[in-house]
Image (cartoon, rainbow, N blue to C red):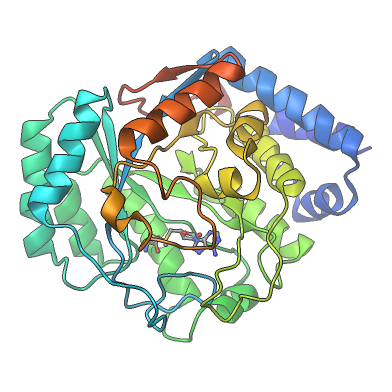
Length: 351
Ligand code: SAM
């Protein structure tokens, strides 16, 4: 019966809320294997045994927000705050470019220092210097005007996980000033402006339920993002959620497979969090339908300060060895690496 639901998803690219709930609540290992095989076949048919590499630059760990799950939350006094200078960010891009990267992902906390006046010249600079590269931003919630200015300055894509599509859960995870409505407003605005947009969520996070995961799947179906970022929740010892268990790989890879079947054309990273809960987590992600990996280009000196959760993979390796390790991991499962822009190509057959 669950395999019929998975087939229905494959045919119709949607399920009802009740069907999502049933699938997630009652799936058995055989259903997960069925979804994984199908998702992997769909991915290979569309992208080949190839993985897009994106270089991620963690440009600031200052954050005005106070997400209860996140290690760089404003109220964590135990970390040394840093922001990279424009020259340092450009040096990360230069090193990434030399290594063949053609997508830079600039991610950070919500740092009020980075006004549009500071970001626009930086983006123009990157755009001018690397006209053949895509620029992905992951800077959190900003105004419509700001998103427009950053787009006009050269940004192409924006990653903003919706975190959860269940309002009650969102309110358990965030203080009242961070609203559910604003997070979603941002996503719709980013889409309207013309960014390639990524939403996503953590799997196995505190208080998450099957119904809330079904809310996520329905929301993803509605938003039709070009990218989807999802990985397991992992506790951070200096956050209010420190005593909760991490999300497990089985449920995360099952949801990843369902996302691939839902949206065969989506750009779906095997996340660092997945590679943190299990050393071969990113390989498992790729075999479950992922087609993107994001090696870290941040300077080694700041990596230990960008800990969203404990034991984050890759904090002790420099960019070159991180890239090599991920390349080797992909080779072990017979995948080769593509570092080109790798833009979203919509599957017109699905629309
Ligand atoms: N500030 C930007 C934003 O809000 O989108 C980007 C940076 S934010 C730290 C990136 C993502 O990290 C969040 O969307 C969240 O899903 C994830 N994250 C934060 N804490 C985490 C944790 N403890 N376990 C797993 N993922 C986490």
